[in-house]
Picture 1 (cartoon, helix red, strand yellow):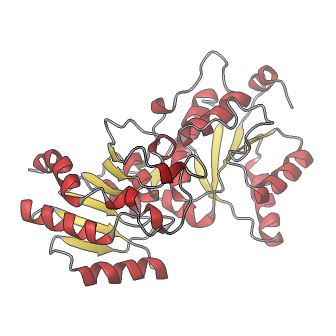
Picture 2 (tube, helix red, strand yellow):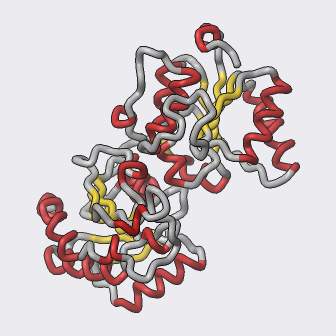
Picture 3 (cartoon, one colour):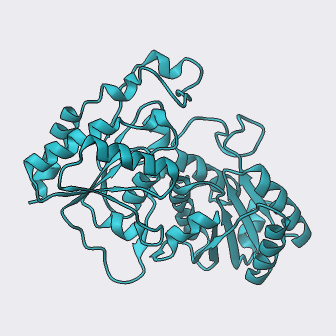
Length: 347
């Protein structure tokens, strides 16, 4: 591994940052992109993401010079990406949350090209040079720790609250409306606030101010279409609409809202990155890891001290649960009373 000082003295022109993860992780990774931009202000930074996620960045600007689609599903992708990186003249590769598939590709590619390859594998408890490897931290901080270890200035440790992810429109500004986003989906059932609670909350908001519009973004996946069917059966009020936006327009549609209320999911991170205030409903996973934001700006609901949550690990990893006590006891009436001040500002 190259000496950090020698590396900093090199003329690094083109940097590739890789994050082979889903939407929320890609957005949180923007914090590391911003940190690296400060370390290498004259370099060109490319941010490599799975192809379907890259579409999210089509109409926004970040601290990356370019977001590129990067899939490795077969040998065809290997050859295509090899050719793509050759065209970009990459001088250095840094991978956040290293995966097995990308590790094989980049170890081979960087060895062949004789360029540095650094990475941070979050799953490892020890055995690497990454600062505080294995320590449970906010996800953004764990990403920053990796870059700080291999590329950062030792007298300037980056703190995650100073690097909130940021997306901006390519042209003009996003105009906010009297709109609230409900984030009802999640990666597993146990992270989902009950759908009937969302409907109850929507009705309370409608009775309080029928001019406030509520949007529920859903994809066209079979799981999301089932959620759509359930919500319609529960009887949504007239101010609440289920919408199906493409990823290329999703940032703008989310940014038009004044408030996000929902599960800890990719849309929550998108709302924060586009300047929307958020209220997150946490159940099985603790916010100290998956909510790497200022809780005064972005409050959350979380029931502390549940023994069942930490029975096997520092969080509950169940996909289904009969009691769902962690979320079922966060009642819509309490959520409504908490957001009432924000609703007053809509006027």
